[in-house]
Image 1 (cartoon, rainbow, N blue to C red):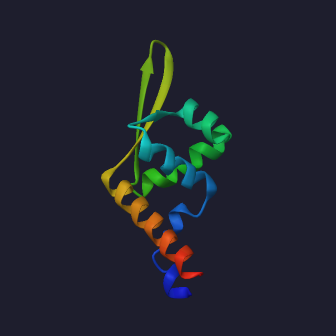
Image 2: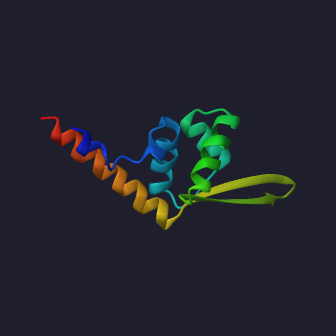
Amino acid sequence: MFSALENINKAFESKARLGIMSALMVNESLDFATLKSLLQLTDGNLASHTRNLEDLGYITCEKRFIGRKPNTTFSITEKGRVAFAEHLKALEIFIKSQN
């Protein structure tokens, strides 16, 4: 059983990070407010998880102003796309091994 778990990426164990990565896999980019609403996270919680994923190189963060309002947009990197796909594959293998 432990061999089936060895390819699980610990960066995606959090429900919030799993949600962030899932949302970014199917969207070119999402802004902070949209991710916050979609995942029902607090500002601090979303900021913490996105910062962690950014530090790992899995997502990028672009900060700019639209008019006078700050706007933060997140996108998945190729490294993040590959890592998340490998994680999902590992989960699938693990689930199938339980039968």
